Image (tube, rainbow, N blue to C red; front, side):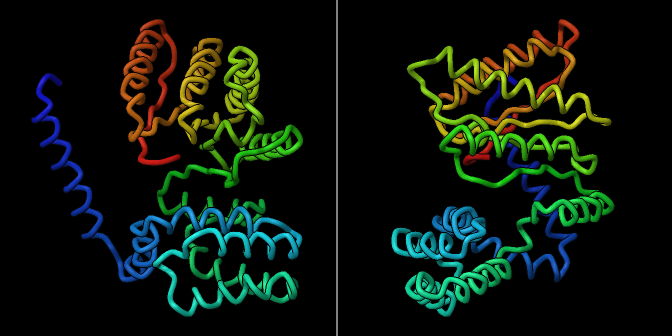
Length: 291
């Protein structure tokens, strides 16, 4: 479109229409669940704190490890405003007492956090995940499965996470998966561009090959987490799909990065040529943050 002002007006009106529609169909149960969610999102420390708590405190099987991580998290991170004064007090007490009584404190801490945000996160245990996906699919929702976790630090951890993602892709109940490079390839070295690109492309290729072999094919979306990963991710994404012209896939661009506009233009140009040559579509998702 040649008129940016007209595009802005039409975009604003479309978003307003979405908001009106969503509000008109909202139920009391929806309002009860979205209230705390809105508070969590609007508070700058809400989402980062929750993600760190889930990854570092609730994930470890060893209560002693969880207790150590809880103390570190509470000590080094501001407590988000969506927590009540009582919850903040309990977190501080748990951080102090947890290392001494981990078997008592940590199950209680996990249970309380699950009460607060459990409706936002699905247990990755297969039976629970499959049941959740079925219920939501029957309700008419499309679902993007994203395996939570911090960036991997070593090859063994990367291999374990990679195998978990392969298992998700192979699961008949899953038809859409999001993947971060930092979760499946460890120790990327931007001074060794060719070597890092080769490792990333190999990992993406394995994911795409498995995804295209499922029935129906599983859609794989590659998320972006760090600015440093932008050009490596794009290069690996394009090269892997150039070798697989009939495979559909998606990539995320972070809207707050100035480089993303040039990246978007490059991807659109490449995708247009790919489509004109008989290739499949790609999906580009613009996001505010990591994914």
